[in-house]
Length: 279
Image (cartoon, rainbow, N blue to C red):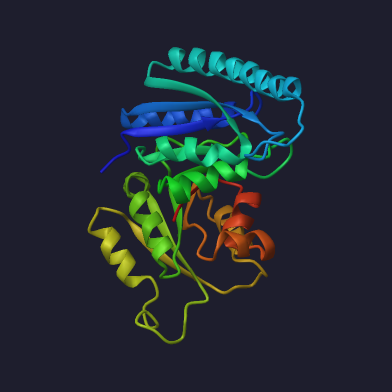
């Protein structure tokens, strides 16, 4: 198992360097193919026509989006051409409410999607929707990369957040090539349940499965000493000098996490190292 098609989606000339360089690095490492989707986004439209809207205004917003995607395409094509990897660049213009269809069309045929953090300074409004579209509609694992951080070609330490959920197991299976490449995988269990099949050996069956795939693992059982699970994971990642965190995405509904918060949303906001997520 390996990543043969790696996709990245770019919608602004700014904030493209980190995810583009990470895409190139991973593509070169596993001798795969890089796909870049460059989208010009009409952020003034919500997916429907405003009655009485001036046609010239609508045309102007589309023209601006086409101009922006042309600039992105030029930058991306030049950098990928210099990298020496096999690549393909696709362009398009979409309204912000229609992004999901475009992202999912390519994500579902990709082994991994590389994106930058969707929250933070100067992030475009569509960044969150792109991550969610790749996860839900595309059913692809997503590697979220913070600014100025890249995943080493050979990660030394990887944290796996394990809570016995379907989402966590999906992420682990999707991350298996990276886990096999790591020197050490730390299976992190936070406040394991006192009742259940793994109560006497939290994470034991997972470590057994991974070890049969040649993964060297250890189990870290932690208490929830901070309010948010994501804060505990981030602190442990710093303490153990981890290069990557692997975790399931959106164990609760997207609506609930948008309103009340959750481990996925908080991690997307505050991650200090690259995070591989899957749903």
